[in-house]
Image (cartoon, rainbow, N blue to C red):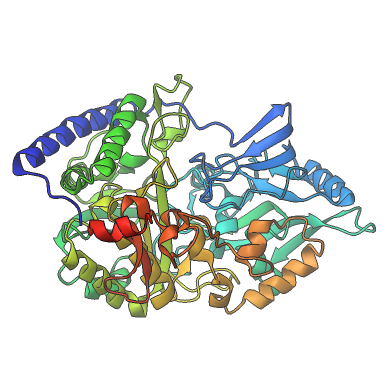
Length: 603
């Protein structure tokens, strides 16, 4: 259990957080259009050779370095075909990387040091916009922000999408990215795709590269495999999406206590088209997003510029990170809870970055066009300022550094899962402040998809973000509570992990959770029989060869394994492998205060 701070120290802590967060908010408001955009995730020693690739956060879950012999930047489909053909002829491994490489998992990594990275950075053009057919065809490197803007030019809108617009079309399809809705075809972008152009390895007769045009009507089997492909079928060249006439949304955030949240979570998504939740379990509160479609002629020019996606002053980010590290070092639960309460209340008071006219917030409801309300990420839309400001997670500065655990729980089991989390909070009320420091648990609705690696049923997606230590062997405050939630979801409720997020253990045996996995693997074998677009990582998560679990001292601290012995935790620091508190089948790294037990492990 965490040590309890004295009342006077708690007051000082709260005052400290108010000061820091005031600086943070001021910098966020002032620097909304000034920031240093992220650098290319691919770095090479000489030209485009001898390269490494990382993600937006600068570190993969296992902290490995991913290398490649070189990187190619095709600018047209013809150049892409040439690149794939040359690599296929040489029998080289290939993987695709995007402009911002936002996936946490090792989807961009190729094997060894001789592979080829294919960047879609310059495959970023609109191919065709057809207002009459309500379709938009774009290259796979087009970002969500570009896609939204291009659709708006012809009076159209993508109905659902992720909230962060720094993702590319190919990246969203590679990982099954989604927004929040149970309506229509659901919130996944890939379920609004009508055609895919895919470049895969080919035979000698194909010139070593083959272009396939896939659609639901002509090639339904291959189309449903390609809609969420993890990049193992080839490179997506172009995508055609079905749009809708532009509409507006009416949005209000309402904070309530979470006493009846289990029941509300099951039904709320049927009442509001774009509903979601931000759950603050240690505070016993939930923020309900009451978000509905309204006619385009309703008055309102609202804008969502989500606060945590805005440019941040680097100095403020460094101070906040240092304070987190200090709280971890001294096991300061009161400090974390004070900061969490301040952050959540401030975000709510500032409407999370919503404004009624693009400048100020004057009250609810905020009404605005879909293209202004659906996604944001203004820290990307900026000029170089020498890293005075940056996106909050930019690895070039001392900034946010975190784990993300994200999974979908079937809607029929959501109430039970929520009650399990509440049971953990009853054991220690401060335990989940560590989540609330990162805006709480974001919960978004998803539906079943015909995509073979898409969602299997109506579900709620739970997104947990929490502190990660720079030292992989450093235990975290209340990490046993987070690990237990993770294992309850994955094993008690058979949750599906998000392909682009999560720690390694989330993908252990995941192949068994997808009924259509055999059909996907059959298409994969047909498209790429030599496995040139596969890697050790994709083979592991698809159950082809090996396992994602890495067994070594301290492996459970970073989710590389589930502990089965004390050495997998941090025994010299008092963290031992113990059963869960609510879910007894769980095995988690728990701090044991009994000195005699800890000392016995030293002999």
